[in-house]
Image 1 (cartoon, rainbow, N blue to C red):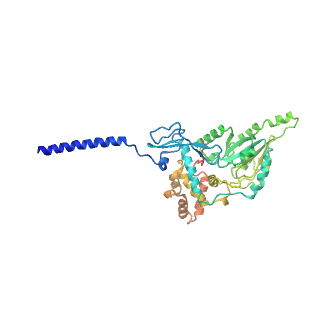
Image 2 (cartoon, rainbow, N blue to C red):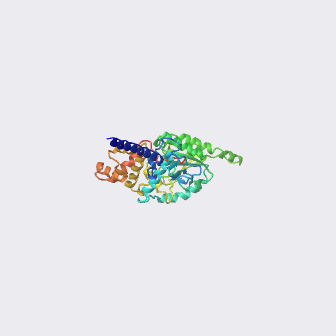
Amino acid sequence: MRCLKGIRGFSFVLLLICNVLSAMLAQLSPSPSPSPANLTHFIHRRTFRNSTLAVSASPPTANSSRPPIQIIGGKDSTLDVTRKNDSKGFTLEANEEEIDWMNLESDIRLWTRALRPVQWYPGHIMKTEKELREQLKLMDVVIEVRDARIPLSTTHPKMDAWLGNRKRILVLNREDMISTEDRNDWARYFAKQGIKVIFTNGKLGMGAMKLGRLAKSLAGDVNGKRREKGLLPRPVRAGIIGYPNVGKSSLINRLLKRKICAAAPRPGVTREMKWVKLGDGLDLLDSPGMLPMRIDDQAAAIKLAICDDIGEKAYDFIDVAGILVQMLARIPEVGSRALYSRYKIQLDGGCGKKFVKTLGLDLFGGDSHQAAFRILSDFRKGKFGYISLERPPL
């Protein structure tokens, strides 16, 4: 009996020692590191702006290398991202919003690889580009109009070379399609570059009169110099240029308070350059939309198609709508819940093209083209809210 009690006591002590040793080993062993593929699960846009996100306990070192990651469409648009792989895991240093959009841009490029390239260069653009470049030499100030939803994708890659040191006003049209926070972010971004920016709504005319006053003020020294040379004063010459369907003609009509220039919600309506007078002090040049002969950045090209800033013959509706669905599902302000709320269809496996085809079966008798047109039309009409498809590279 005593022997049995002794064995039991010894077993209890041995079990206690084993438990203590196990706990000590668990504290000494490193915690499992998250894989690079899962880093995005720790990132949420617009949670903590301009903050550093550490996915491990180790702080970033001062000598960490920072490879630049290019965001589409803009010059000097680089993001500094440090990813350090050590025994304690990965350290990711960057603005959370930037990382989220950086990953989305990368995914858009991946999605477009298997698609037919989006290219559109009608004959009237080729015909007028040379003439426009000659007219720009006569301009006192140039007004460049872009789509506020995609400001980086709606700038011509040769624009800076064309304008040189000429005074420029940047207009971000369709300001009603983006949020106030987006407007403030873009205003700060361009202000750092010394570019005058005005937000406008070509349909309702907001910002149009301010644009006219700013154009005259920037070119106000023109007649002063002419008087010094003994020349008579003349109206200020302002050229309005930009991509197709960004609202150039609508802005001119708003400035004139009457319909002088042909305007319609589709690309390629303006095919010839036209001078119009705004009172006695300002002459405006309306020009056709200018596109590069070849669009190398297909992520930018897809956004042009989504925002209706390129001809419909340039792209496949189903492909573009499918990518839009995948983009909207990734944008927190929309997400898959908003897609389900509007169409009563689940985004199965994150595949946008399958979503479009299912919508075609449910609403359009199997016509996926009509379903794609509905999704694109809903986005262009603001049915998903104030959605910007680009963020400033900070």
